[in-house]
Image 1 (tube, one colour):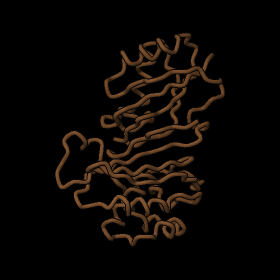
Image 2 (cartoon, rainbow, N blue to C red; image 1 turned 180 degrees about the vertical axis):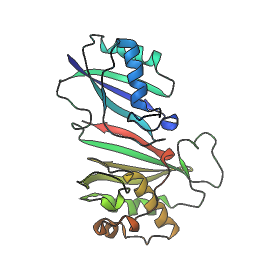
Image 3 (tube, helix red, strand yellow; image 1 turned 135 degrees about the horizontal axis):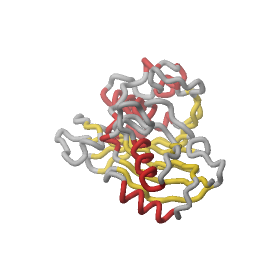
Length: 244
């Protein structure tokens, strides 16, 4: 028995998130189908994170404990030959048997893309949130810096989450502009349900005046979801980097 680590990327548009669901197509199910076709066994594939419906990944890691002896490079080639075009395997490596893609992850980086223009972009509408009103990226970058802390982020967690420990350590948060594309980048040791989307909505609500500037720290300390901003749509969100 061996344990292998797959590094993949995917366009989440056609999928109901990562985790296998009844009567819904997911990334995990699609990977398991491809792996079973190649190796003849339906081994469990453990992901580094749950992603919501419509969310994308530039980098996503998952491990498989398997009896298959197929060399890693051959498995990468075989998986890419079988998988649909919106999922790609970029790397495969043997790892210790007790390695766990989720629990051994030290931190993750997400980006959220905002198309900031009065005009639509037909090439980015599946991969960004369109905000037609002007955004001051430098101002929002200064606001985003208030997220950097180890704290209870329950105010930035969607209702319905079963997670009991809502303390997270956010080590990076920044907003940058490249032409009409504004990107919010955030890195932490873990994220709560819809946390990045709520962070993004809060920044946009600060920009529009619905939330006063300089109050993100107070919102975090309050623990009150009602004080934070709206939950931004999933299309603009990418899991960008997984760090072990």
